[in-house]
Amino acid sequence: MRITSKGQVTIPLAARQATGLLPNCEVEFEVQGKKVVIRKAVKRSRRGERIVEHLRGRGSVNMSTDEIMALTRRG
Image 1 (cartoon, rainbow, N blue to C red):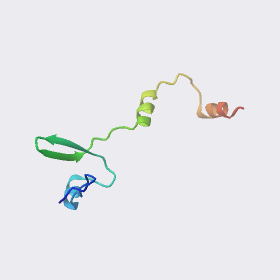
Image 2: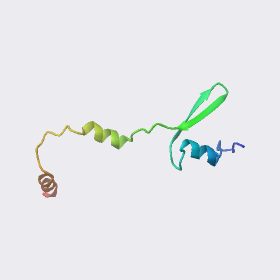
Image 3: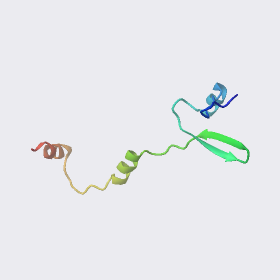
Image 4: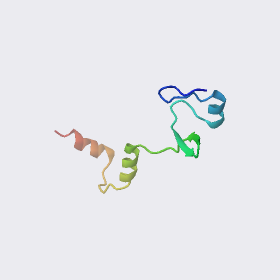
C-alpha cells in the first residue's frame, strides 16, 4: 500500500468493517514511536450543540410557546 503525494491512503475494507469506520466518520491518529495508530474518534459535540446544552434550563420566563410566538410576530 502506498501513501499518495497528498498523504492519503486507502484503508482496506476488512479493516474498516472490523472497526466500524464508515464513510464520513471522524478518525484520530496517535503516534507510538515509529508506529501510527488510527482509531474512530470519540464523538465531540458541535459548537451549536454545546451552546444549546449550556443554555438548557436557564430560561426564567414562564410563557407558553404560543405566547412567545405571538411576541415575535408583533411588529
